[in-house]
Length: 437
Image (tube, rainbow, N blue to C red; front, side, top):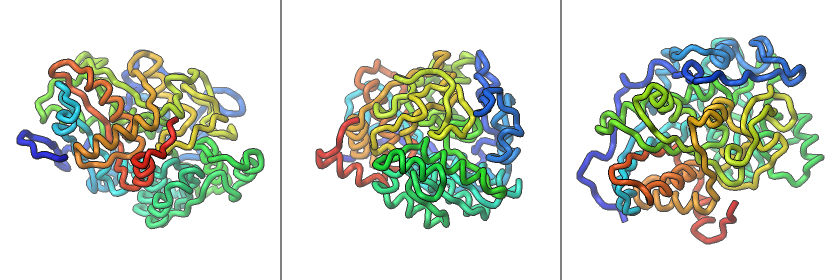
């Protein structure tokens, strides 16, 4: 039962506090990350290798080692629709757990599309617009990224075509309805609309799909259209770069709350954009000796790339069309169980997150589906916000720590999005019919 609290529960910054630059962790890593390789030659990529997929503005960000990269005014203007995002002190969750820890959460569900994904979709659409591209193609898992890119494409007058993982396309109809409201075209993947999709359907007729399959279809469509670009919602450096507005704001909000130190940070991890966005500015604080925060990536047991994968070069997609990336991977052909956290059902982890994990800058745990939803329901009943299926993994990780926390320990949770379009999953959990991963 919700109960009132008397102390400060929320910090909302002003528009003047929206970051003016994205933070690039490459500049501060103790050792440089391995370069991506050309899929045909195994040689390090050069910018011209990516021209068929991305505009030069994004390619330059992908390859940059500059610490601070300016956010264009046009992008910051759109950010004002939801940024800065709020941070809350979770008093009622603390009480429900009986923990001596102080728990905070940074909530990204207030964006127009209900998730953190718009932090990158808007700049991606902007840089494509100024480069003269007229069409964007992409994949999406649970649908948060697809909805975010559809919104951004409409904002900048671009066409948007989206291949959604089939299990999510069929199980989350309101997600692709959301994309279509914003003017995008969407279809379940693998589909009959691409050569790769047709081959995958023939080879795996009963497949529930995967992000790797959907990526292959979206890349094929982009490569065949000179007016199109491929847009990615996670994994690549420039995507994680855009998400660092989250972590920059979070550090400032903790200061306003009067918290000089942060002991633990929990964030869900699938491809790595949410985790990188909130954690990379904190890693910088750790590296410079201002913090000693334990950062925990919370991934699904159904796709445990960090905790069970191999650190090696692998393709980002199933068909082997993308560059090879040095990452923790379960293998390009891995197809996860069709769990509800579709945004986390990816075979690999972002190279920068993988590198940080390999260097010991990040820890990782895996969370089974029922534990994640048990945490999400507890959080909902305490805090009045229904989290996205993906966010539940971070909440579950934080609850594990809170139950054994020391007096005065400070815990921050990255709540990456709203779960209002995930209500069928919650219904399945509450009925006792949810399968575990």
